[in-house]
Image (spheres, one colour):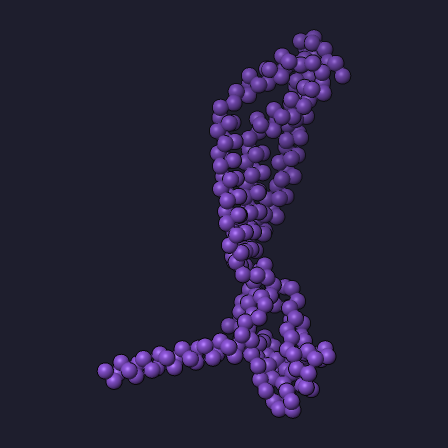
Length: 247
């Protein structure tokens, strides 16, 4: 019975210590990676305030003087990692040395996970996946040979034929749609990682997105080249059949 009472008393004391520590060391506004973060401490009677900044990796700054900005002392700090940063400070408030402490989180976006945005991104990804399936299904069911023959049979003038040929080119080369939708999916995934604060994976996705974006130029160049080739072939067929080309 005595042991149970002693354990209960110990747990109560630990809770009290935890709550008192939480009050003494408070959390301040979140910071963003590679963006200046203003560390401030109000003290009108202080003649100096020094701070030390620590993370789980060690001490980043030690006894760094703050600048007096009237009644507030400030220091501009630029974090370069998404971690928790602890700030310990000391100043001569009212002529007596007194200390203070607080901490702040650093994330890629400068804010904690935004559930609404993440859910929206996931819905977008699902939408794009469904769109990929619809495009693939439509491509498999489309008779492109009959489509091409219909364009030739219904030829009236080169402008209309060019417009129909452009639409035909886009839909015949289905990989263009796959590539473009895949690019959108990568961008959305990149935003999800950004919100989840996955710094290392985010950096890989950034590289992948940049490379993928450059590939869009090759895809567009191929599409333009195919369209030009298709129109030349169409004009030759129309000319050989003596249908004439009405500009």
